[in-house]
Image (cartoon, rainbow over all chains, first blue to last red; front, top):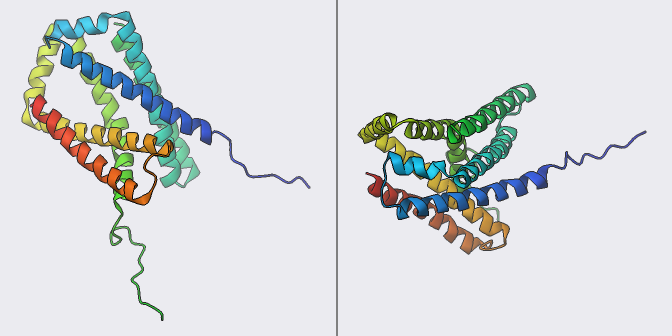
Length: 114
Length: 125
């Protein structure tokens, strides 16, 4: 007889770590953005547009959105696992969350590089 | 001596400890930031970047007190999530794990969320 040990899928620690790393990346980006906005002398369309025309700022913003989506995925998955007990409903909702997040990520690229 | 203690598991009847309130608000705000938070953020960003006209239209849209009010509420959700997240990170590093300290930091998170929302809200208004 084969004895199977129920040890889980081993993604718990990785997700835990990713949740924290993405949080720190987002916090740093947002604090920098706040500092830039406070320091900038004018707040109009031109200033806004100029800020987002810098390639490095675009890349940083893209990194922010990737972290946001990844962070949201782990959080939403944990919440769904805690409260939705019917496997089929949970799977459906998880798929919807993934599709929404992929859509958000592609949309952010479209906005940043248009 | 057997003491008679009330025992109920009804979530409404139990007085939740502060950490539980901070924690559930962290979850609720997280879900709301995922939806409708992210789509609203992306929509706003797109409108503000599209053209000078859409930027101006967006500005006048934000001038509506009802919209401003919702924005302040959204700001509170975000700031609570932010502060509660920092508390989480501190605890991961074993700072403030003791009961008294965790109660203090829980209170601090609640207060900072609201104070920062008022400060930024007043600045934006």
